[in-house]
Image (cartoon, rainbow, N blue to C red; front, side, top):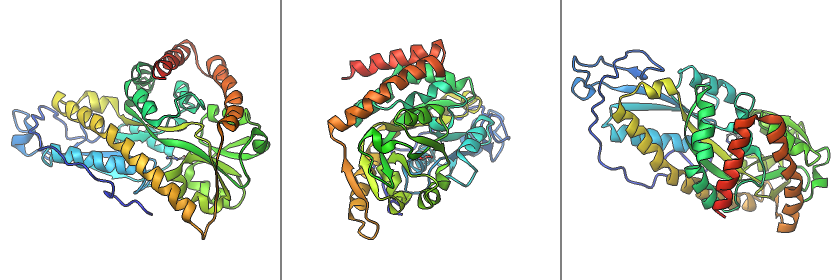
Length: 367
Ligand code: 6CS
């Protein structure tokens, strides 16, 4: 794996904060403050009592990949800022089960933090599938990230819908533009005819590929390399860093730079745990989440650029890389547009329709 833990660390941490850590008052793990190693003093001030907190942060990726590196840096920052009082254990994908298991652990307070891809929660929060709508966000990654940072449709409306399911999104970030890989060339919609496309669990992602004539098949990424290798599926979509790091290019002859969508992930927290924290700790979390937004943007941009070169230079596993022209992209965009009607008419209700309308306005205002 090219990107080792901490390999992307390039920013200094401001001096440790003195936290009041007042009255967390729990010795239980989970939703009411995580694990507290030593009881709070009579006045509930953890600094004086030497109280420490142990929290868990689960990701859908492994060391060297964006989500894991994000969580590792987040944990390190929180630890330094709290002068060692808050310790966060970061789990790679696979250590605590499937993507769906991880979401349940967050909802039940077994883990306090998780990076969640909306693609795996489509059956629960249908509106989160808005991220599956291809060609919705601008091609410019910086503009897209700005929308993710500031959108009321996402940060208030959609976040509220997740919170109703005991998942509190603290931030949305792009892991990069998604590209297609295939056992055959993917340049026109005709190339997708009967193409066995691996997708995440989301019904809307599947619908998007049906619109191209493909035969979508939902799978966990843990099964994807073998499934591509054995021809169980013909291709998949992901950001470049993930294609290279998971070695999908080794078992795919073609990669199409399609930039048809972004891979958006959410930093989430269990709401009961979060709401039960003292104000200063919540502020520390919020401030660190905000600091991580430019950091994760930089991280994904560097990884996506460097690993494109790796794929191109991997002569032992040659992959033909082809970038779609604007005209070729247009043919896909035309087929993708009716999927927005499907989202509005078949997937969500009034709240989801209003959210998409506002999001479209916010996107238009940035272009
Ligand atoms: O394709 C997937 O399912 C995986 N892709 C990324 C970029 N992150 C984790 C996710 O599970």
